[in-house]
Image (cartoon, rainbow, N blue to C red):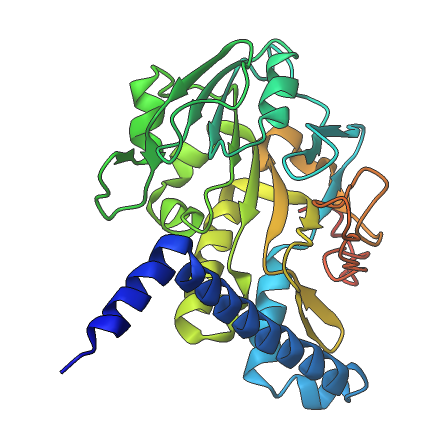
Length: 315
């Protein structure tokens, strides 16, 4: 028979929060074990022979993902940081102004709206969506908040698909839109459901991709590759930045952050002006997501050097 004293003890611990504290300790311990394993694997593969690494399924999966994220430069168009110096700012093409862009969408509000404020200050109207918060953390000019989320094909209470949201706002068929999406992993089903026609309505798309270590498993790898390949039909990666809150995955000469910010530019806007980008990341425009943690050095993992095949100069 359970002890009444034991039940009272559990109740007391629940009230004062020690159970929650122990759960946080368990989560912390699990993350520490994961990080130590990642570091151990990184050290073990750092000096491994390339031919040996290429036989590993994990290496091939990571290489396929980083290959889909090889970055390009747009000749004649500068990059600019849009938003704050910490988590919430994105590096984008300096074309965010009317008439090129007159309206924008922000999915995932959270505590930082510096990107939204910066875009609105350029004369662009915004609709900001988040079903997990009651409102904006601060006023954003030219912005309307909708307490609603974005979803994939699977019905989710309080959420709409990307095409439905665009239609709700009377933007069907428009091509003067911009999109920012930071929705904590829900981006993969959103991309799987969205049509290329809907995605092509956005001149630039800034996405924070989450849970990228899932590519080490066949199902996760398939989901990530499908989402990136869908975006690559209409857009080209022009900038990447690793979120330093999580330890990245290192395997040989490759690095894949658990959370990665990527900016995409619409292919049809720039024709043959996409040229290989050959520089290490982070760049001078990047900032660490957290003030007390350094940026993740990505090196040239995501830089597309000159293509060895003669005659190819654009994406």
